[in-house]
Image (cartoon, rainbow, N blue to C red; front, side, top):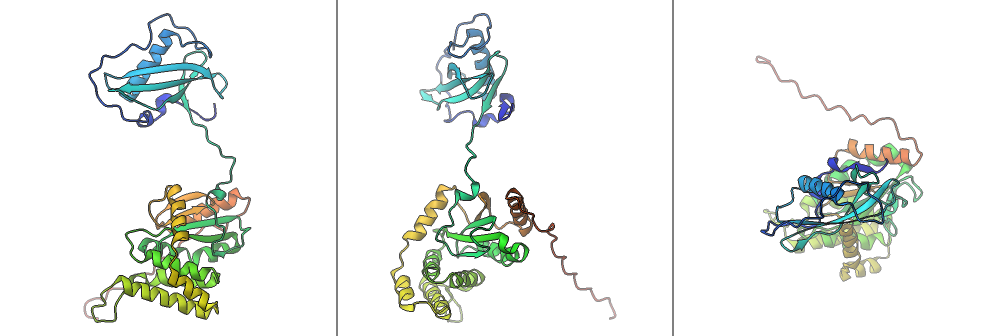
Length: 339
């Protein structure tokens, strides 16, 4: 039966919604013993069958001796031939959330069934609307949305790896968008995000040129002009503002507008982007969503290509030939004695 996993194969660490503590309470019998009869929805569970259910769950979940179990049902379910049992566990006055199980109508099988709505396109999980994009058009079959921190060294490593590799391999089949997720431990990451977004409002190319440069030179940002090259936050902010302004001049944008945006340092849009990421379960960068498929960390380009290839196939497209990593350069030969 599709979607049903026998209960004995489920990891029982997921059984209880709250942790039940040990107690000294006497165990309350769930029901009185009686001859076994099949389960029927709309009627109380026969006592002997309820006892078999309780014994199984106590063994599998390793419930503390003082705990009690309440079994209600069965009620009709969405699965033919099965009814729904709703069970709660109580110990030391702490009660779990209700947990649903499936019980076959003949009373011989207990199962758990998780039901998920997959009607929505995973690609729509993270919106790319209003963000500067590179690569293919909006109609490209694969959309990569990356949550990026411009001060994050792992983001810089991934950024360097996938560009221009994505464009070289896939061309217009893949569209790439970045969303902001500056980590609080990175002192100038928020400033960088605000600055490049100010430029991105007027120039997509200027935005990406700035992102490319900051990721490539992040380790140098904030260095002073003295011999020690001590890094400071004011120096980092000054350098970020300067390089974005220079890029704006190169792109011939409205400079008074850009300067006003940089001076204002309005962080609301960046914070909203970060909140979107938190809502998606993101707690580190880089994080990519490839047509909704979430991957974390600076992973090898071969792995990212495999996810993109799968997304292309799902979209009815033919991916490029299998990727073959470039051969490593041979190590220089060692000189032999006497040479």
